[in-house]
Image (cartoon, rainbow, N blue to C red; front, side):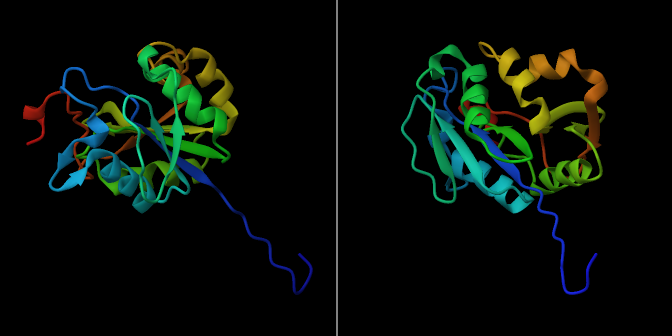
Length: 191
């Protein structure tokens, strides 16, 4: 390195909130549901930004969304399932990696996101949070894998098909104690 010059390594990790669904089992779009006074979509954006993601993209569909601190990506094909939301987000994302989280996981903690990003910076190209040894949310996927994820994301299968087809790529990241990985499919689950 020449004297007087500084080299800075910038690692951009985009956060992606999958929030386009109608929430049929819930009775309304989950993105708009409030938990402890905050919409689930806003909780998810906060989770990702506090965890170290920048920027944060929110995929909208069934309900139009305006979300402070995030860029909304419209998914006109949202009725076909989560796969179209993953494709919509990754097609416009411009980063080295992405952390994906469904909007209906309000009990996750920002430390889980931080741990995934740390695993990525340590060399993992795919990192998945685990709780008691079981894979859960969120998941981080490096941009080099996005074309394969986009190709396999169909129907209600987001990144799951890619992950199942490529288990050797996945670095499990223990996230016990950072929050709960539970998703909420009914109003009763918000307890």
